[in-house]
Image (cartoon, rainbow, N blue to C red):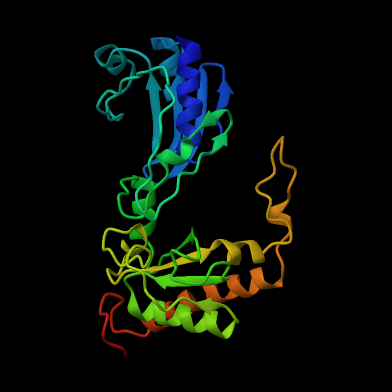
Length: 282
């Protein structure tokens, strides 16, 4: 049971891109870092004394404590200030190989992290996102810029083109991004492909504080590859490549353009009578 519980916690941490669980005397601790959940403590072999000792040691807000115990039993271990949540259920099933057919315009990517395979299936998608952390981050930001990868064909460009589709629901930010990237020497795809332009209101990049949407960049494979001298992949046991350490001058030109456009957008927003008044300036 506890081996299964440990596997669940490790998989939970990987799928949410948070810190790896840390072993504690009473179980595992995960530093989540979310506004409503700073730390998640998981009691693997819970009892009243252990739980109460942990509660007494908590000294920061937004701490969650989870135990594999019936809710009515666990509630008696906590003082009234602690808020119970709906119980969850640990379920397991043997995995079976299956053919995956991606929709048109999409490709299947499988990742492995800390022994968890396929955790890319749990990432925050652009439009069908329901991750509270991602939504909270976007909703608290005046501007959001998301970066994605595509093929040249998907971008409406010739094969092998080093280009970028500039999208997002904020037309002014799109114009600033296109201008900055063009001046930096990058090819801007002009076809505005519907499946890549990121203008859907539910897209994570458009869930901004001001309500005017954000920006989205779809970079072709050859463009992404051109920004590094070693594009073999992230370093791991079987692939010693050092992509993060091999950025070139074009990488920093692209990065500077991506920083300058939102900075200009923010300066224009701050010049308004109100941040939420999209058409007015002081």
